[in-house]
Length: 493
Ligand SMILES: Nc1ncnc2c1ncn2[C@@H]1O[C@H](COP(=O)(O)OP(=O)(O)OP(=O)(O)O)[C@@H](O)[C@H]1O
Ligand SMILES: [Mg+2]
Image (cartoon, rainbow, N blue to C red; front, top):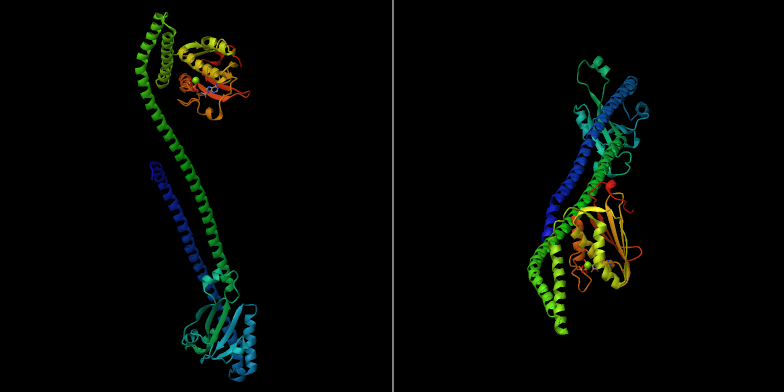
């Protein structure tokens, strides 16, 4: 793993941990909400059961009274003996019981004797069956006040998952002693143990009540699930966004690091070049002045000697310029802060290049306000304008025109534009032209524009390279005036 990716992985680590913990907490929320819902469900079911049991006891007690008053007593008085095998008696009992059940949702009502045989049932086919008694019946005969059983045809979890529960899925069976009426007990039994005459079994359907609790549980779980999912996606979205921001910031940092590295390399190369150039400059000066001296002294010599001496002189001049360029770029000097007139400096550069322009048929159209002054260094600005004009002339490589204009836009900066009628900057050259040592010329150093930029920068100005709409290169330079806007002369707009 290289340094950058190691770094990236290190930066990601706390972020991944945060993501991990947030996901874990979401899962915990979900699990705890399910547990909570189950607990709420159990409590709800317990209270449903309790109220159903209370209701069943009231009902059983009432049926017991009614049987005693409207059936047992009248029959005992009338025929001396209660025998449900007698159809008339059975019919009477059925009427008494049915009158109590009217409108109630009961699955069945049964009466058992002490041999656990069914004496009466709302389902007549069950009468006299001996195999239908349940564990509660003997207990009640032995004195237990009542006994409850919950009967469910499917487990509760399955019921929870079943879309619509059928009636009769959850039943409550209540077993209750069939005794003498309480009022009668006081009057006749005088505190003797109450005889259990039989056992009453009521089976009621609790499914509608369970449906209600299951619906509430589903709503709670659904609500938790939806809110947890929303939370999860929100978190996921935020995490993704933060991850993206982090990685793009890291990419930018890496890019800046690479640029810094490159700049450091260039700076150290510049220092090396500058020290070499510095060592070359002095002996070069001696070569140049000696060759100049020899040219003057040997004017009478033959043409070959003259040509060789001239070549030595020209080449040493050219080498001197190159060395100076290197030095200017590698060790830019601090500009002076004189008040300089831009038109004067431009005129000086144009005058110097005038002969060459004339020879090549280059026309100059300069429209510059005479009063534009900036705080700056006339020598450096001269070098900058010279380089731009020289580039324009080299680009046109023959007859052409150079337009120089000045403006004082609303922001109060002075703008100078140089436009030529050459081919303009090639597309791949435009963003490299200001790189040091970038040149498309055989004899170029590629330091012209970087030097111009360094000079303009040191004056607090800025430079922009572009191609003009009409074709040709368009170089825009802007300077801060260092003065309030109103003090500037009648600059051209
Ligand atoms: N006016 C222009 N029109 C078209 N291309 C230009 C113009 N000025 C500069 N360039 C392009 O930008 C490149 C860089 O210019 P720069 O002045 O930095 O170096 P150079 O002119 O090649 O070398 P040197 O200035 O040392 O002679 C040039 O080689 C050229 O391709
Ligand atoms: Mg140049």
